[in-house]
Image (cartoon, rainbow, N blue to C red; front, side):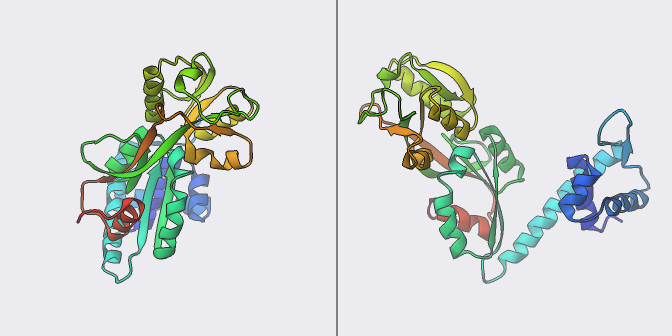
Length: 299
């Protein structure tokens, strides 16, 4: 009973998508095939696992269905880990590295290191997802993801932190802004200016706020976002100025869509970024990834 991992994976996909059609699409099979595998599981367990409700979209789980889902997820995770451990026994490093990162690092700082890594390890597949800092930490702690990359990292229980990059921060404004032709700008000069900021819960926002406070510059925050691309778009059309990682502005600066103005030496600061992994024995593929991203790591 329950010896078909494929059926268990289909069941977990159905629970997570709440949709027979999406589950079928995700697994490249028909909806009727999904229904048949679920009915087979119900016969094996002699329990009803899901129920339909005309007043609610998707599916509802019975108590037995919830219990099966929890156990199936654990079993599938262990099976995946076993497969990866067997791959580690091979002479060539292979396997999948599951990476979750905040947008500003994953979109701009990671690609330049990822490309040579994949060339060096052609049998390693990097599965990349983007998320907010709190979810990055949680998904690495839970084991759902192997590696997390965040900005302004702090030590966290159960996780090992490796330094990644130090991002120089700079003022960004529209090309027609009065500050656009300056060779450098003091943070104090930003006082009262319309400012496009990161959302308050984002660590980079807290870092920028502290630097502005130290400079005595109270900016006029007109809107906030958790996505750096949205912030750049609003700065481009003249809605306000912002302070962003220099690396993230290079494309727009080259295209003359944004003007990047360095901060004066006394106000210059960087944003640290870091890599998080669980404090457990790392698979060889994960170790190779972390080493390539931030240097050799301990045994």
